[in-house]
Amino acid sequence: MLLFAPVLQAAEIENVRIWRAPDNTRLVFDLSGPADHTLFTLSSPERIVIDINNASFSANTDNLPLDDTPLTGVRSAPRDGGDLRVVLDLSANVNPRSFALPPNQQHGHRLVIDLYDNEPPRSSLPETSSPRPAPLPRQAPRGGDRDIIIAIDAGHGGEDPGAVAHGAREKDVVLSISRHLKRIIDAEPGFKAEMVRTGDYFIPLRRRTEIARKHNADLLVSVHADAFTRQSAFGASVYALSNGGATSETARLLADRENRSDLIGGVGGVSLSNKDQVLASVLLDLSMTATLSASLDVGQQVLNSIGQFTPLHKRRVEQAGFMVLKSPDIPSILIETGFISNPGEARKLTTESHQKGVANAIHAGIREYFHRNPPPDTRIAALRDSGELQTAKATEHTVRSGDTLSMIAARYGVTVASLRQANDVPGDRIRVGQVIKIPAGSMLVRN
Image (cartoon, rainbow, N blue to C red; front, side, top):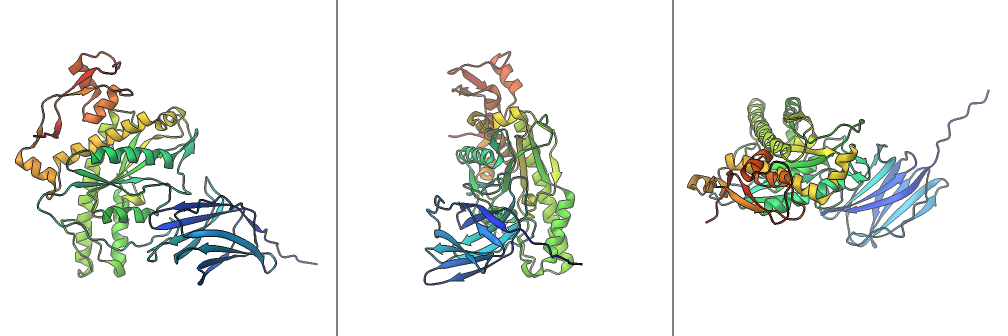
């Protein structure tokens, strides 16, 4: 009786994709199947060599966008019979990291090569891993003169498109909404927005919270768009971290003795490096509890504001263990702006007017929360204490092309019903040039 060992089918590199991020370049090889690989570097000239077992190369690399990357070319050749050698020609020295990814809903097997420009990354492992970000100090008080910092995280990016349906890609929709939100926040006195992702590239989830901490953020807002198997699902949602997620993250931080200097709570932060296990546990628990409470409060304010502009999926802030929400020292919320899987909402989410309306609504909720709860070392706190931040008298808005009552309500943090009542408008019809009276609300009064 003859026994035959199974013959592994050769993996073929069918496509090559590339993205440029602020501190790295990501190269993705789309494979027809799994394949083992090894990677090493060569100098004079600078090259990266990737040997892939039992593989072939059929992708066209002639039109790869190599501008503003350290790559000058990608070439390949067979090696040792059925194996493959891929050479990346470089114009500068980089720190490479590589890993394989299994198939998901959008892509098959992938080999990911991250080329970091300067120092080696703390981690470039796939999202199923738990790399530990090094701590970054929060900003010390500056006599009440600093802006409130809002970190805006546009979900997904690069080779991760997020939900895809009805011609819309989540990564594109949420980046556009996030850019509108940044412009609106930056125009608000006493506030400043920092983008976590500024373009079409991927950032690991823990790295996103690390970037927010680097900017000394007072709030992290992660913007997404939902999807479901039933196309009838609709409406926006807001999430904060679940109690279970907070507990597991506290345990993870306490178990990580090597990097126990994470900063938690309070102005300037508290170092855990010199605390015993019991005290460190108490401090972390207090910080996580306070952060979660603030997240729920600002989340409900944002949800109420969004509900004045677009239908809601749930009227209360939901809680889940999303990785991007697991910061012990930065209040964090995740906003699902609507369902891309719903044909009607997908059409709206891809229009600029709706994206601006969503951004206006998010901003109104953030502004209202921080006007009530300003960090003590900020301009907004100083203005409130001095009486310059007060309930203003009714103001006016001149209707521009594309405006709707719901967009105007979201912009000024009032209800559509109050706008109708103040302006004697029975329905939703308004005209360009019409002057809309805005009922009184909390706002910054300029001298």
